[in-house]
Amino acid sequence: QEQLVESGGGLVQAAGSLRLSCAASGGTFSAATMGWFRQAPGKEREFVAALRWSGGSTRYADSVKDRFTASRDNAKNTVSLQMNKLSPEDSAVYYCAATYYYSGPYYYSASSYNYWGQGTQVTVSS
Image (cartoon, rainbow, N blue to C red):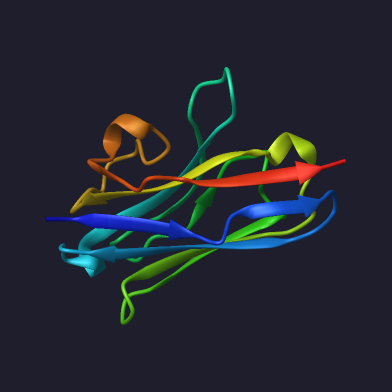
């Protein structure tokens, strides 16, 4: 059974950096489109970044473009999210998600993903 485990969240000051990791097990990782989403209190879950399984480009939400960098290591079954220049608006629970053999256009939609991690809290203080 597919399992995703995030790590690396915490408290950081504004303009600081954090690196999140997600370890996947139980599936064919190289065939997974991996997504990062976040959810702040009282808000809907929102797309952050996606790494396509078929070798397509990594996609980012406009709000994090040029600040966040997502990467994957198929040999280690992990994905990472390097977050720089953090602001209080980035505070949220961050989730890793996976969907297999998906090549559709809705990589930014949470409904496209079948598997989710438990989430890791990121808090950015001003």
